[in-house]
Image (cartoon, rainbow, N blue to C red; front, side, top):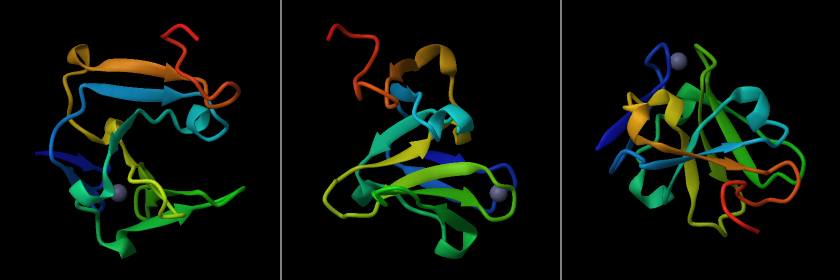
Length: 119
Ligand SMILES: [Zn+2]
């Protein structure tokens, strides 16, 4: 079990295991927030009380990006269309040994592909 905790401690998520791989995306929001995303099924993550975070939703309204209402840390995103069995936790909120985590660059801005593998 691993916890993701915002700076003030108000928003906490629990996931079954620490990530061995995270994604760094260059899309319009991720390049601004600097998040490192660890992906999970929503069924295996314990979310913070809904009142602890507020969501940012824009564009095609596919994803909700949640930040702590108190300290502003970006904690996770959730799919809004319900079609995807996937959510992401910002692994920056986890106490990880980063030397042991693979960080994969993802080109969310253009090609929607990982940049560390051949096309
Ligand atoms: Zn907080």
